[in-house]
Length: 503
Ligand SMILES: Cc1cc2nc3c(=O)[nH]c(=O)nc-3n(C[C@H](O)[C@H](O)[C@H](O)COP(=O)(O)OP(=O)(O)OC[C@H]3O[C@@H](n4cnc5c(N)ncnc54)[C@H](O)[C@@H]3O)c2cc1C
Image (cartoon, rainbow, N blue to C red; front, top):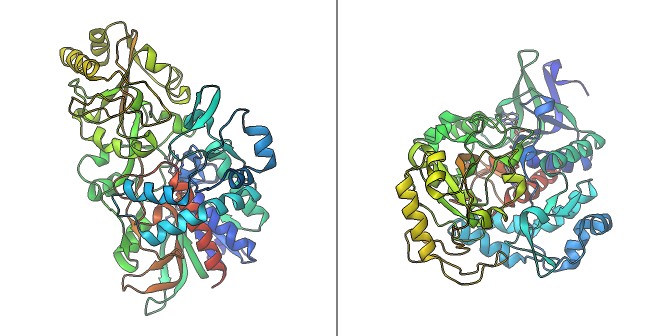
């Protein structure tokens, strides 16, 4: 087959993007023997979208440890599972309940069911394609009474995280005969007169500086959300969001999504909602750092307290396991003065935070022997911080601390309360980490059915057109259970690729 630089091409399946969703789709289509072409806006060395930046955490439903062992494979069990590990399970019912409660009952039930039911089988398929699975000891387990115990329903991850996930999928695609064209953003699609069937893709070759058209039987959109576009963030998410820091790829700027919902596609989901977390305030606001990657995230807040510049707490740090709160707390931080907050720890609690996120080489900090000294060093109102810490310490219950459960060790007689893990902040030295709002991805997107088929503006399914990953709306609302972006993208990406191959 020719190259895209011929100006006019034909393929069986065109896939847009090189993130997790797109690569799962491309690989699935190519393995069905279809001529598959991938078009990516970024250059080759920046491929992989947000998927590259991930911790590789992948939420799956597994009812029994045998299924999990099967996903990890013999080599995974032998080489990566530590002795004295309580192999975790997480049933489909638990996944369903978590997704439902975390999204306030709004998640699309059809898509949710597909994702939950397909999560384990897709993980197993991914292993067969070369993705090395491991258990995420560092981020998701605690060593208690001599045994490794996992918490929060999230335990499976890619050994080597996002970069390895993207690389293994890319290599598998190449082996399956997929053709890649980088620096070739898709700008629009072409349809038959009645918007019943997709017919071609219009892209722009940035190197040759000319448009290209590719005729296709089917197209899969995996081009992410609009989180890296400050104008669209302000327009959809609201005032101030243009100033949030971008955690991942700078290439997810949403123009194709905007064109789609503006002219031919139905839209779905919470367009004013986004996944956003506590993020190192000293980072580049416009893009994640491919070297530092997810280490700029600061998810140890559940062990300490979080205050604003006025020294006041404004959220319940221990409302739930952090897997179920971190994605909504970025919004709370954005609402604070100067969009800044400080995570405060003492010498007991700092010992428990994840070193990957808090080691001095990745996490600027202020350290002091007194709360007043800490406030002064960090630029926080000192008398107010003193009051906040005193009140918090006085309210903290004497119940035993247990990081593996919602331990009920609360500071309840406060507003906001800290519902669990309320360890008093009393042993110097004290630490402050300055964070801001880091946006991960946006929740609004295209409307799809259970086969990842795109529903057009007319309410009819557009034959041959599919979407997966962050491009799809309707799965997450207001909040997000950690690790479900990758499983959602993989399951729907794979479905999309198989359905596209059958067109
Ligand atoms: C720091 C960080 C850590 C994360 N950790 C996790 C985790 O551990 N587990 C988890 O489940 N989720 C995690 N996430 C969320 C996760 O990244 C997403 O849910 C998932 O990777 C999205 O995959 P995707 O394929 O939809 O999009 P992406 O991976 O973002 O891929 C979109 C691709 O489309 C390309 N593109 C955009 N526009 C065009 C266009 N017009 N034409 C052609 N190409 C285009 C982009 O360049 C990009 O390559 C994390 C995100 C970040 C930023």
